[in-house]
Length: 468
Image 1: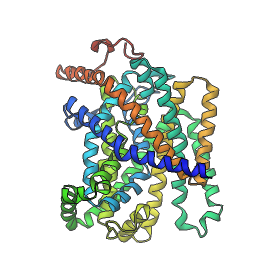
Image 2 (image 1 turned 45 degrees about the vertical axis):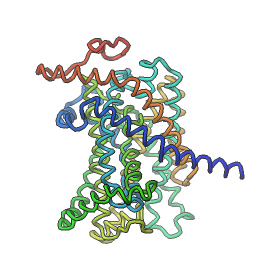
Image 3 (image 1 turned 180 degrees about the vertical axis):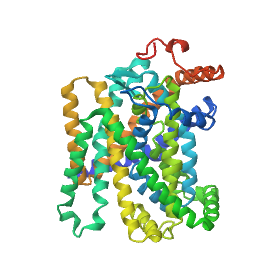
Image 4 (image 1 turned 120 degrees about the vertical axis):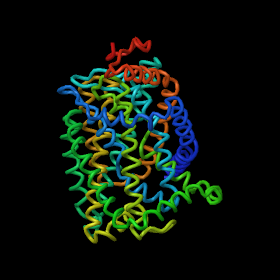
């Protein structure tokens, strides 16, 4: 028992160091570097990104829109509700401004990693597979490091975060059941989630992409409409809320008086770890898209970052700030604060709305996370037996996660994600020039009035599988 306690303590301290100091600095500096190198692409080329998502993929392949929905499915989870609410309580209204700033900075990293994933993607039946493990192996000639990345991602997303999302779905029903923990409800929910997950996991990428392209827009639109309604009926208070957010965001006296718990640190952490820009997860979805030029999917993934933070996280922020239940440093926080904020405008139905939102957000994260993990299983081994065993274990993890909150396991998943992100950041810093050269090629073709089509040899590459 003492050994386990010591392990938990070390894990917590490691987690705090990685997420409060090391990884934050690394992600910010990387985002700023690529923002400058790409000429603020995440702002400058948003109209082009919107145009690209309207393109249709070939029959039987994944379109840009479907790949966008898979990435958004994974990015947008319960953290967009509970995480944002908690960030506001701990860091104050200024935290939301720093979330926006980190979103803009992170967009450049998202572009680079997703463009690289497209350049080094490989055929996988009628679709494609790829991601950091693949560009690490091919471009850096380090298969061993690619395997390290793949293992970290699989453990983190398929077995860590998917268990957590399943538990969040179960927990959202506590409001409706007396003596919830001793009831059969968690078991029933676990069985239902496991069955649905099995149908999707064993159905492959096409089934996942189809479900994501339907569920993600529905959940996002419903949640945004609720936020807009609250925004509009409180429109007289909105200018004051914006004023408070910006004044507290740049109140440097209070910021540096308690820096570790300030709106800057909390807002930066929530922004970076919600949109996952630079962490190496979303490129696994970006690689699956069928596009005529890798830059197209790089641009589309910038949109996914913006949808996650500028739209979904901001919706939660304004629901909380305009709900009349919010107190900086107060005891009411997380999902209960969002529930009470919506209930203040919708009554009892507000509780049910948040329950539905949590279930949709969490479940789409489950299928998005699984998609990432499967791409990395295939990197390690092409054996159908290995894949079927992995799918079975992933389903079991969803069932188990619905029953028990294993806090130590989630801390471990956080540490694994930090290590995974570090490997990816080193890789994209070393390989970033390739993505930037692809961007120059794309812009050159656009200036000539062409619809950009990529040939790897045009930027001096001869080691790609799909762009001969």
